[in-house]
Image 1 (cartoon, rainbow, N blue to C red):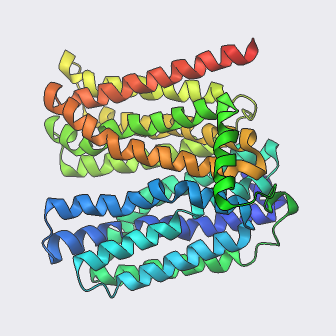
Image 2 (image 1 turned 120 degrees about the horizontal axis):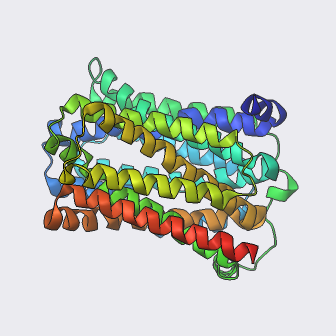
Length: 403
């Protein structure tokens, strides 16, 4: 099997993937515990939850470009170890948080360390895995991330039945330390992953990265399309529970729809790595964008035109969305790694995460306005239309590359 061969042949990637399991699970294991602590223990209001969103997103917007530049300048091994270790320390401190402001401050601090992990992981994949194996490597990495989104909150909710919410912070911190310990076994950073060209200052290094992106139209278009994909998802993502309720489904069906998305994402990410599309990333993106757009329009607009929506179809659509979305996200990462190269992938990846975060912050408000004006299903249709537009852009990109 291709994945077994990939893991067997590339020891450093094998360690990186193994370390990603506890690292990604730590992103989601205490997600429910934070909500329970704020909403049920401290009786926080809606404004507090809005500040929670700010604390989680602000580091990626403000520190993203700086972190990317530093990752490109520093050896990747200590960055990976340090970001996981310091994140674990901040998570342990959450156990001691005496009040809401302290809790939010520590979450902000934790994400300041986490900002370095994403770009460093992209640098590591680019340097440790040859180009012909990067698509399955990214597929496996994305599959681990999707699985953690489903299993992490589910496991956290189950543990809350027997543990206090604060206890999950201790368990989560241990997961972060486990990831850092696994990464200690990485071999020394290869020369291709060192600092690249030397620039006189950090600011010059950041400017050099932005100029590099500006000099490659395919990078500009890819970064904007990837953030557009996140915007399309978050136009409707927060309103799934409302739509499920409007369609007459129980909270159990809503929960199963979240599981279906995760399972579809894992299957899609692993499946795309088995297909030889390394040189046809745009083709996979086109297929994924059109499928995602069609499914969203069917989900949001179908019932308005008298189409029956049984629970089985509802869940099947969400499984399909998980699968088709992975066909968009995984090739984008492979495309960015190929076009950026080892010297610039940290900065390119960080700029991408900044744009993605801005899209995630803004899209729900636009989705809420659409839902208020035209109904909940309209936000799903809007997300589907945006995905179709992204697919058309990718299709035009293939024509331009051929000519």
